[in-house]
Image (cartoon, rainbow, N blue to C red; front, side, top):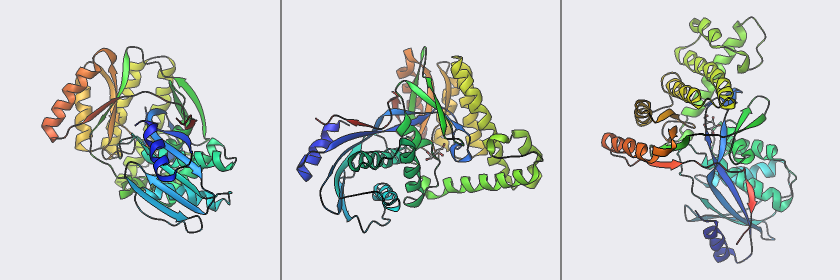
Length: 385
Ligand code: GLA
């Protein structure tokens, strides 16, 4: 999506000169469903995202126009309430601004982008972070990027109602081109790793099965993990201050004290925390093949223990496993549909994905989409024009 469409639409609707912002979506190499369990995740911002054109309008009215939905919505800044659909992502953010008594005034805004919705690339975080970043610049709230990430996360909890972790917002705001982020979700500290892919490239295959995290499964996973954690804290003799202190053996030993699903979720969490730490070392040592093996293991865990995969995703990962040019593949993001992320030999990724998507079409009669990933900087102001 060219930003120029957003600017043109803004001119057509509001007739003033806006400022322009870009807020990226994200990928995640490893560390899935671990952010809200205070583990480690390894996301990166990507070059697909949401563009925002925003200008103050010297009134008390907030005028939104969603380019992708071709819908408008206006509300007084004194009457911001929960709504539905895309409105909740922008209104949730405005509500956070109001809760914090920040000096908000009326504004006009047009936003839209090229992140496929429901594909696990975090379009919602891009929408939330982009708006808050823009308002912060325009009305000079003096929020840091971390403040923005935390407020956007709160907005997602309160308005759309998904009890998400911090990964998506963090990646969208802190991304660095040609790098991945290793984020410690407990301490909210990160380091960057250069993304050196050698003879490989990163490719997403979109099942086109739309997930809906708000459907409740995501929140249920979170509750099951909390339940598991409580049992572990009560029964393990040493001091446990977060999931980072828990090992798979601890969970195995408490199997009898846990309801079956709670046990499965807890085991997955501890295994994935270990995997992500190992993966960080592999990336540092440029051992991409080893990294890829861990991705397959993550998929197995997400499919069998955490149960957030679906037949379409499992099919794509199985095909990937069989292919000598693919060294790692797994479901990415919240799951229940969306994309797989794949490490594929650069020289034949197009051919390989063509074979896989043909087989997928035969099996499910769905045209999967394929995107080669390019990383991006975190949310930024761009030059309008
Ligand atoms: C969604 C959530 C994130 C994270 C992932 C799973 O993208 O928004 O916080 O939990 O799912 O890793």
